[in-house]
Amino acid sequence: MGAAFQWPDGIRGAVSLSFDDSRGDTLDNGIEILDRHNVKATFYIVECSFEKRVQDWKDVAASGHELGNHSVCHPCSGNFGFSDDNMLERHTVEQIAADIDDATRKIEDTFGLTPQTFAYPCGQKFVGRGRGTASYVPVIAERFVVGRGFRDESTNLPVVCDLAQVCGEDFDCKTFDQVKSILERTAAAGRWVVFVGHGVGDGGGQVVLRSMLDQLCAYVNDPDNGLWADTVVNVGTYVRDHQDL
Ligand SMILES: [Zn+2]
Image (cartoon, rainbow, N blue to C red; front, side, top):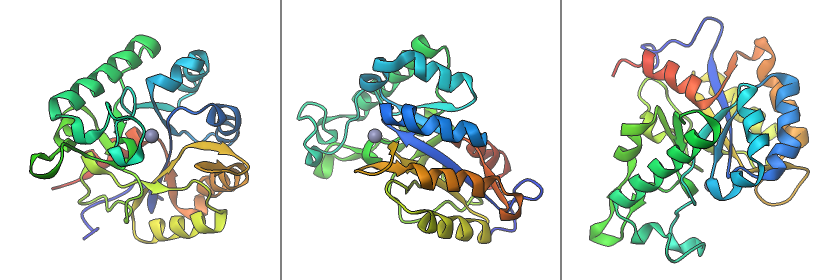
């Protein structure tokens, strides 16, 4: 496997940087680093938080970053304890589809763009419980170029990967050495890694470290490392157009 898929000339593997939940510290600490290195990232925004800083998110989109759909208000398993009314175990496929369509309409109305990719809240892809459980992956496949997971055990093998279930690699709290070893393996194996973070800062939970992000951006921009760094939609579209399934 692998011989049937070709990255663009000079490229051995691809990397996308994504940030979930439209956090303020991502705006305050992350955008400056990405823009200084001219690395384009993907931001999976949720209405309940992006409404606090709409103009800032408009500026992010205007500078070439991607805004993606992350649902209206983040339905996950009841085990997280976020909300009894919004737990996946109590949703149906029709309800989750309506939520995702509402989120798309809100992004269209607010930003004048249609999101092309989706990130599964908490990386979870089911609704219901027990024998009544269903996958909502087909809902995403019908609507988006890519559906991105979280904390998956693998990176993506482009010749066969299902774009409706692209693997996500957690890079919150990671050191540059940890991230660099993933990038080296990605290039060596011709793969696509999609990093997933939340906030950006100097420490704390669910935070991409500023110093690491700065080093990561410099690394992916060095042509000797053979990596193509781009948004989830741009790499996903390339993979879609070059898979021969
Ligand atoms: Zn999230």
